[in-house]
Length: 504
Image: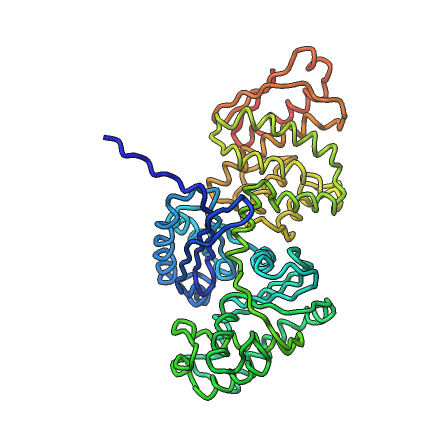
């Protein structure tokens, strides 16, 4: 007897944050396609950053802690469709040398794809989450988030960030580095604060001149410090410099993190990383001349949900990112449009035979077609290499590192010789996807080489595994000998990777 399939919870969206100290999951119920109500939260301290060894590899124990947590999260998310869950890894995952190997196991445990995002993307999502919890005023605000492995600073107005920075200092790393074996001494604080000031120094002047009117802190260390200050009567409204100094004195008086755990308001699982976080916060207050910090209930988790809602409503920030890159590098949008139409026409006819995801493939082909000539802004010679470099190394809001690497591989493989090495850095499944989509892009580029505004005649693309046959009207082929010669040359180049292209 067949079991009744589970009913998918299509009204829900979920975000998973694989933080350097804790893993968080938040589930929301969508209301009117524009807002959500939080219906569930889970948090587990995994201490991922503390599990990095001297080679920056995640230890076996750290991986097992993480996988066990993700399996529990995965059970809660099992009935939510894939497109409504966004899971991201942050600083510790960015640092881990063995992150790619770990990712396959992590995704299997969670049951959903996981992205490793850049610090700038983390900052954007933090601001998005924070700004949706604050009054919709028009003043500039400074937002600070101190996580386990990094600290994000953002200046923005309303829902738009103006400046974003991610600094490699976090409560876990600084606690392990400066407060060895949990000891808390005045000299330890002094060294930690100086180290944080050195991290802040290159951006300090720009933030002092950014004309922000109020400061807001979010998540982790900052909400923990706020709770401690209120519990001890050191502040009754957010975080103040005086309250921070009193907390610092109390931590030094305690002498170690075990005794610090007995202070009013200190959570047991937060005590071991509290000194490092407090030192970073003290340095930030001093460097940026902060007098008072309000506390936001929003954070990156909420930012992920709002970003996900945008994608569901087809207001994808990634499309805006692509437009901005095209503008920045003066892309010929008419030519990009011609290439995109031809590449999508090819993709639409081959996707079933090659087993390609229709939505993902269409997005990637469209983005690659629009960006394929951004390298011309550097030089015509080797412009495909320049295009790939710019995509791989630019801040691209909404894109994960894996997204950028895949797009960069497609752009690198768009012309000249196509070798397997172009896709060697990608996981096997992504390498096959990238190769298939790159072939569609290469065919489109050959057909649009004349840059003529005259519409190309329809062509057929008949695919099977490892092969593609293009069909044209006989009189069109006779009237376009250069295009035919281009396609014959393309067939020779693709033969080098064991792919057969035929033209009739």
